[in-house]
Picture 1 (cartoon, rainbow, N blue to C red):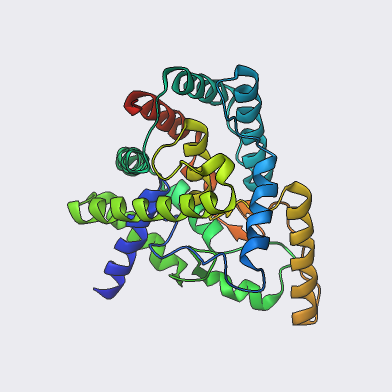
Picture 2 (cartoon, rainbow, N blue to C red):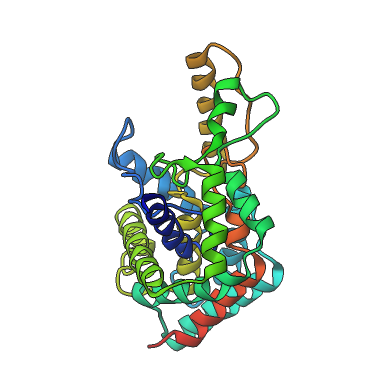
Length: 304
């Protein structure tokens, strides 16, 4: 019974990232703790956001550039490629929102993500579950030291390590629950978890970059909504630009190698499938059809 409750919690949070077996229902890591001070963290976030250059007006060139930059930002960090069709849809939706004075609220975004997840859940394939499980088991490499290989019998649904459980048990229960269908408890729990994740992400971004996210607690544009969705799915706090992120991974490799007394392999990307910092199955959660559906619902439900 305890294991079933645990898996239900996982799956409730999985709805938050639009797929099964992706993210644990726990608080996000407190990004202001640890060796990095809060202001330094805010600076790293601003460096990351600078690569996107979110628009602040209804300027078509700025909107088009920001959408392209967002696609590049997500790709180099997680390996996920937003299709040209979806980038065009994002540009048009952002343009419509700004020209018509439309917005969506954080609560509306929460409901959109819940609805999309509930639609998508029954279609999750076993191959996608396997792919998600593989990512959640942690970074993998042919030269991974033995101790780290042994640790891959578990899944780690969040970067802070909370919610760890045996990978095969997680897979079995995920398939069972998918086959038996979602119940009202799971949907309600997922909706609450989504709202919490969105609130925490918006608060962090508003504190770090009030220029771009100062009004995000009450209204969002499509570009902001997609960025926030990605951040939750990837467990990516959006800190560092590309150069800084590569340096962080190099430092991480050096420190682990020193700590264990043997070489630790390098990684290709920080987040997403087989991510070096926080591996998350972003490609399963944010596939092309899912991104398109989110954008269409944002356009449909946006209001003045």
